[in-house]
Image (cartoon, rainbow, N blue to C red; front, side, top):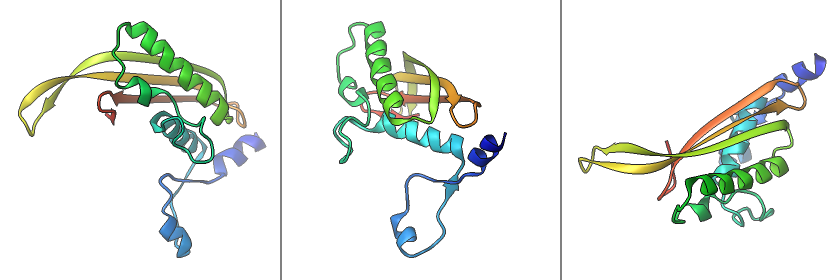
Amino acid sequence: MANQNLAMNTKFLKIPLPVSKLIEGQEILVCNLKESISQNLELIIMTRFGEHRYDFDFGCEIWDLDFELIVSENKWEEKLRQSLLQSITTHEDRLSEIQLSVKISEIEKQNLIRNYTEIKKRVDIVLSGVIRKTGESFSFNNSLFLSPLSVD
């Protein structure tokens, strides 16, 4: 229980880190453990392999898969799922017992500016796991639109 209280009371920096405030000694926003893990997962999802200067293996394949012709949705989903699972297992060691699903679907979106309906491919990412320090259940959901990649 003491371990759980310590983990829940620990403060983590919120992304994006406002470097100018940090340099000026101003107060910066913080978040709790669950929010910090979620932020890191979002960063992994939105980072292209090779983009992180100090760790070229940080990120996932979604940027490469974004413009790939989807012949088989099941194969595409599994390829992305494996890429994410490998990266999350490597770069988010605060989680264990990770279960991950990736599902692609077509969504109609109304473009209000140009006044037309467009069909976009949406990727839903659902993760569940256990926070190692506390033994507490953790869940994470994220949806992205493909070509060009954007957040819902």
